[in-house]
Length: 234
Ligand code: ADP
Ligand code: MG
Image 1 (spheres, rainbow, N blue to C red):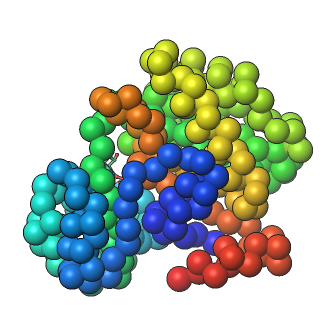
Image 2 (image 1 turned 30 degrees about the vertical axis):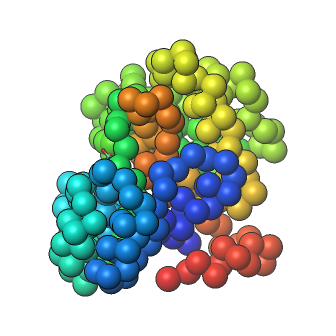
């Protein structure tokens, strides 16, 4: 079962994955209020649909005031968004997420997926954040790093460290990226997720490490023990 970005970010935050401050809205008034409460110089208004590729399709708007957030909300709510992942029929936007704009230094890609044959988790990381991983795999496969964990073995700090080295994360931010990877793993296993994708994971000019986008796919066969997650269904 898929959930929206704002729901995924709430879950990840619970497990200690750093995400920007933000709130969901379904009207112009609500959106404006969220922006006023955030009080940041830059806000990002993001269409909440069950598909990626929103950025290139006009579903992610970077604005500079609460008033502009209102305009962006007006444009997006009830509009149809067609992205490479929605199919030609597109998806109608009912909710938007308004979050703090980040001063991005570098974008990375990181995901974890359950290997259906072994039940082990595979970690996939890349320096090419913000791009579709399939495209990176096709054009520059050498920029993708994978780590396949044995079934029922936890990721080790050393393994997370190795990933940050492969990604070329600057030294002073390595610990933060390692912590993020370990938290992501915790979120993955605690919620019976089949896939968690952070694209992009960013470092900022202020020295933060943040999950700027988040996608989670849950195992519905585990809902008997994950009732709070089943309640997130659209
Ligand atoms: P999608 O994957 O559906 O296109 P993303 O959430 O990944 O949507 O956003 C697309 C791009 O927009 C990101 O790669 C990033 O460059 C930019 N972006 C998204 N959220 C923020 C934010 N909070 N601050 C600054 N830039 C952002
Ligand atoms: Mg994305």
